[in-house]
Length: 385
Image 1 (cartoon, helix red, strand yellow):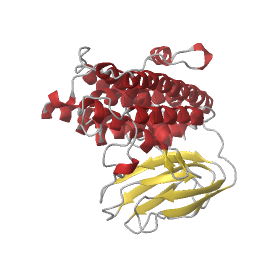
Image 2: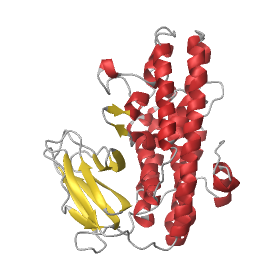
Image 3: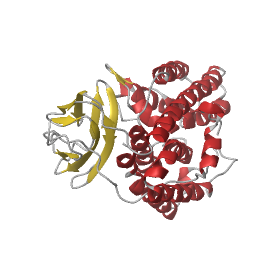
Image 4: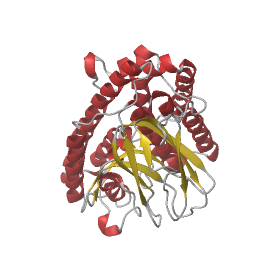
């Protein structure tokens, strides 16, 4: 990995220094949450088709955990915490009867709980007072969050640079080169996908503009990577793709500008790492993401790498807070990456075997390995918040 980080470390060197190849942990740990009474506690949200109002509308600033239960909602499966138009944390794919949580530290201000598709989709949530005192390990966590900001900026720049050859190959009507350039550009996006997903700019959804799959948006709004993918692999042609590629280049450049000054709190890294792995389970492991090229395992690897990097920047601080959790994360990340390595194939565009060559046993093994990582990793945010 060619990832520049502050203080002269590359992300690869940082991971090597930390002894990281994997991450997983048990349990959600301490619930971080300042309830309305100002004491550490949890915010409870029951998701229904009518809405997702929290059990308290006001909470004291500091660390908190949002526990979400889908009671009976069939058309609403996602809850987000918004600050203005930016998604600070989210929990997706909560079918009826399922529950999940996210943890983070909130300073005084006005927020929203948002559940797309509900009758009353937005509920106000107010945080009062000052931020909670820093906990043990916070200095390392703060440094890790700053390093992660550098990592995101580097990945965004890598993405912009990678889309350039894709535009050039399409302009030259070189289908083989365009297919290779498409694959080269995917990983940069997949590593930082939750950051891109956090930007909803007025009427524009930047993630959808870059990465929507066919059917995710109305046909007249479909643009980005997967329009190009379909043209190259189904049509085996670059016809009509130049404008799409140029628009993609403009949007990834916009993303690069938006992340340039972003700062992150440690819990955002933990929540983002989980979100990346949930992307694997919901799309990559099913073959739905790269449905025309079938290079889904490349995206799988990008998501895992992004999650691993986020954890790498948290690991020194987490080690002093809960070394058992840290070690379990390392173990589970190693299991996923070791399993994924079995499917590498340098002769295939993207460097991995095509999804269509996987057997049911392969996909079950991969899904189980990722889930074994998600289960403990989901507890990291509550530890570092």
